[in-house]
Length: 270
Picture 1 (tube, one colour):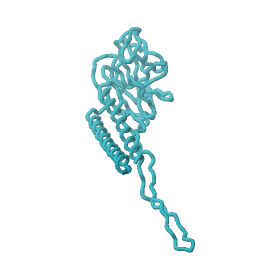
Picture 2: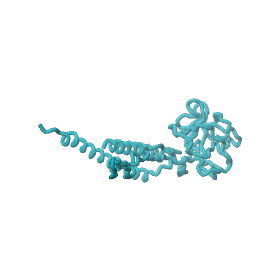
Picture 3: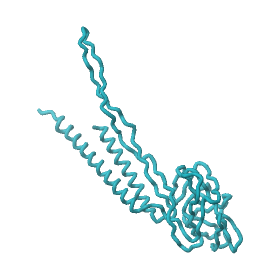
Picture 4: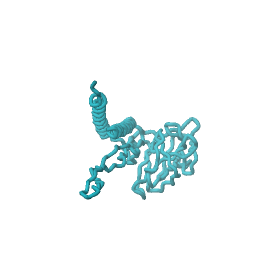
């Protein structure tokens, strides 16, 4: 009985966390460059149930032999192991702003790879993003909309004399036809190694390599939209909520059974 409580509770917790993940996806449906998360559910190890019995052999000493009969496996619950971002290309939205840049994935050498802008994190370390909603701050530095410095191919901050610039084929920043800097575009062969940190930033335990020509293209005056499928996410959230309710009803049934066992079956009549 108590094992049933734990199994149902684990199902409720996993569905609650999945609902929170889907809610976050929907709330970021209009965030440029946002990559939707998917939930990886995993079951706890199953238990093999056996019936323990014995059989008496008709001998002078009445020998008793133990018997074990397999009943079957018992699942002990489920949990959400991790959330995995999906790096499919988002649609493009035209803005007309020179500082808005859409990064488009080209031909990658690895199926699970990704290309990203390189920016500077809060502690000065390299971080990565797909959000190309940039601006030029008061000191002339190119930054993200959350204030993080955009880095060039050498890992240095990009400082410009004007926010009126154009882009070359490989990310060169051109002002009046002269190259002033270039955008740092990083490549990872396994996008699942990237960890979300908020503000559209990703981190990696190992430094990413510079992206090679042909693995990306860029479009100025446009932004990559979120790849969240809002209608699909709403459907998944309703399904998750229904699963939570089903587990909740099972938990209530267990609770009524325990109440009856404690207060009615176990009652001693005087």
